[in-house]
Amino acid sequence: MDKQEKVERNRQAIRNSSSNLLAELDIEFLGRSEQRPVRMQLELLKAETILRENDISSTVVVFGGTQVVPKAEAESRLAIAKRHHSATPDDPRITRVIERAESVLAKSRFYDDALEFGRIVSSVCQTNGRCEFVIATGGGPGIMEAANRGAFEAGAKSIGFNIELPHEQESNPYITPELCFQFSYFALRKFHFILRAAALVVFPGGYGTLDELFNTLTLRQTGRMQEIPIILFGKEYWTKIINFQALADEGVIADEHLDLVYFAETPQDAWGIISEFHHLESS
Image 1: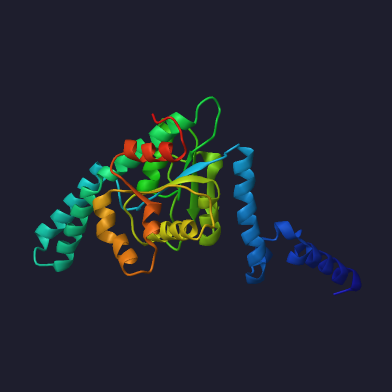
Image 2: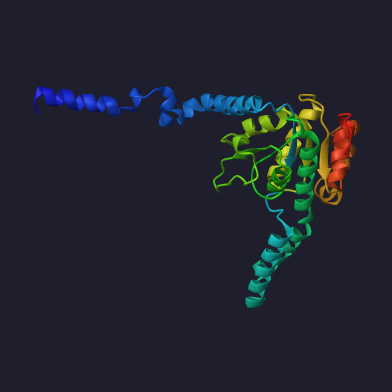
């Protein structure tokens, strides 16, 4: 290889080198572990910038389980489980699947309630171009889908703060496209849930829902966030899952911390609590 060929080969190597990319275009570099602070800052700034550009001043955050689905879907799952059971009646695993499917079916009303709640809030608060009390969810299926769907069917904006998971969680199709965000970090996602929140409404759910609930309760208990009502939807479910009174009786929370939690049984109840808390006209 002569000298000119070596120069040309080196020229091509320079052009192809990742070090020759602008840092903002070097995805591999941005993905390195030492760039985590940069990625976290970007997750903070991207959502913040877009929400400001859309003049969204306040949100109503809705949490709840991904497995709480519409009645027809829950009935279909139960029917499938029963067909499997008829083929293998002695399999205890199928019996357990039926029990769980029946429980999910019993909770399907919460999907309808979340949908109606999203519709009520969005119909009342997003009028004349205002973007107050915008429905914000985790962006996934189940209760999150229902709340976004309620806003969608009311012709209003709603937000989805989705998260990258090992099992991919696709954003539900009812989120306002320009307000559908993806996060790598739960901490930054939780930050955006709380930053503009005027209320938190928590429907039945599992670990993720409990995590988000207790994160908010802790911030309210310690005075590290704005005052908002924290509304648990479905008192029978929540008092079975969490014994708040026992925490106070054991002396690990103050009696007045029980007042951080409200209970609602209907979408109208939940909206009434929010309206009274913020001195709005209930509708």
